[in-house]
Image (cartoon, rainbow, N blue to C red):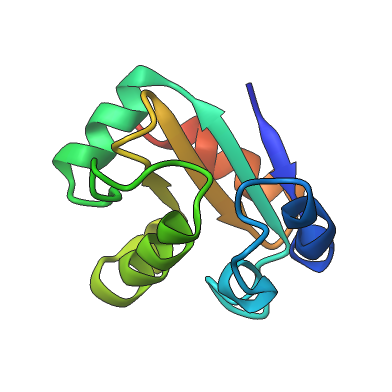
Length: 115
């Protein structure tokens, strides 16, 4: 499964989710101005590799919460996720998130990680 979130429409997406109490900037400002696409997919091998590389959220942070938004901000501050353009959500089995300037770039990151 792949979920597409475009930063410019993240506010509308968040309005209907458990993240509705998170600020729009918490999501849209995670990477930088060149990030236009966020992909959420599931792949055990990629998830395990990212965790072993230390590019993963803490397991106790629930998916789809304001705490996850803050955890992703922490990943951008404290890990090399900005370079890799992908991270694992440890508390969301097999869940990975890739970012890119366009769909093709983000999908390529998602497809290459773990190979």
